[in-house]
Length: 347
Image (cartoon, rainbow, N blue to C red; front, top):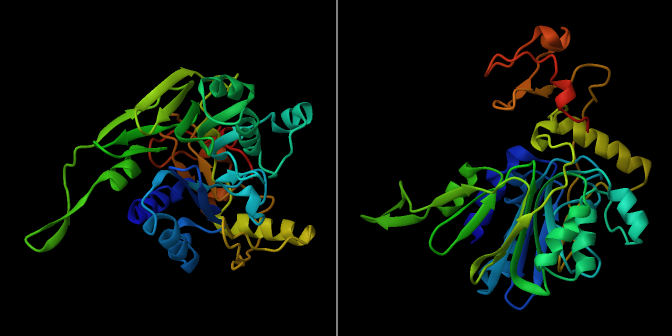
C-alpha cells in the first residue's frame, strides 16, 4: 500500500505542489494522517513520511480507505497546517479532500454558527459532514448547500466502511481491479497505482496489460461507496449554479517559488511559523520555504489555454510577457490566449 500511496501522490503533483497530505481510515473507525506544505516528491521522500507509512499502513492490516491530496493553495496559507488537506476538525471526526473552490463558505459558517477550523473555503465541506455525523443518503442533499466547483472525497469514523464522492464541474475518474478501487482526477494515475509488479524469470517486471476498468464519474453526481459491497447510493449533487466547467478556472499564474514567497510574507505579517508539518500522532515542524522576487505588475509566468478541449498550462517567456496577450496562442492547439486571464484565478 505504501507504494500505491506514493505513486498516487507523485502522479497528482501536477495538480498542486504547495502541500501534500494523506489520511487513512481503519475498520474500527480510527484515523491517522500526515500532511506538510511541500511538493509530493519531497513529502514522499521525507523521514516523516517513512515513519508514518510504517506506523499507519505497514504495521496495521486493517486499513480501509486512504485519501491522498496535492494542494494548489488559493484561500488559506499552506504555512498553517490546518489549511492543508486532508481537512480535519478538532474532534478528529470527518475527513475531507477537495479539488475546487467554494464561494459561500463564509456565509454558511455565519448562518449555521459552525466553528471554522481552517481558513480555506474547503473547510465548510468538513463542517457539513461533521454536523451530519456520518455518511448516509441524506448527506448528499446536505452538501447541496455548497456553491462553487467541487470534486470531493470524504470519510467519517461513524461510518468507517463508507466513502463519499461528490462531483460538480471538476473531474473524478474511478477505476479498479477485482479487489482494489481507486479514484483520481485523471485516468493515468489510476493506471499507475493499479498496475501490479510480478517476478518472472527472477526479474521484477510490471504487468503490461493489467485487468483494470475505468469510468468517469458523471457530472453533478454524489456517490456513496460501501467498501464491503460497492456502490450503495447515487443521487444528484449540484453546487455550480453557473453550470460552467470548474477546472478551467485554475490557472498556474505564478510559479511555485513566487507563491511560496507570497505565503512567506503573509506568514511574517501575522507572525505565523513558516512550517506546516502535521501528523496525527506526533506534530513536528521541519520546513522553511525558499524566497524569490514576486512577479508583480506583469503578465503571469503561466496562463491556461481557454480552449476547453485543450486546457493546457502555457508558459510565457520574458519576451512573451512583454507582448499583448491577444497576440499569443497556445503552443498545443493554436487557440488565441486573449481570454486566458479571464479563465484563470489569481492566487
